[in-house]
Length: 243
Image (cartoon, rainbow, N blue to C red; front, top):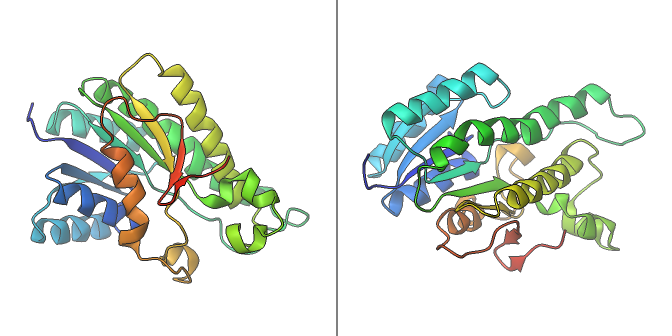
């Protein structure tokens, strides 16, 4: 196995995921670009390599058991271990999400990617992370998942509009992250949630006020935490995000 650190970033063909891959690559990491679409994945890998990043493509659909298992096999063959997993892939579910009128199918679809997909990928990668001297897992959450911020008087300004599929999916992801942190407390794995802030990406129609590079910063920091760093936390650039 190489001494170079190995990361897998899901949904890394564009936006925040791409910038997380670029940032880790700039630190000398070898980065697996996880993405479903081959054309976009190949283009992202080529762009990263042109920038000097040791990048490789990982065909990955987080909603598909076979795809995730194949991705784990690919990384095992390519690198033999995994030092950081960044679960970045996510969807909003689109459209209006008023709880009184939402189609339950929308909620199921969002949870399949944003929560179950994270569990599926994490569990497949745990054996590879177990081979690392300093394994890290970062789950890309959002301030919309903060129940404290959602319930405050300025909830609309701090966490966006009512979105009964997307926002609770991030609260669910936060809770899942805590369960992993409890289970893995006696291991070397540190697992945390990262909030990128309101970033301009196609996920929100580019309405955000932050750049993807700015949105990637917290995830990169958590993926490269020193031994003894925090685990089971929820962080943004300014510090801890309230649950």
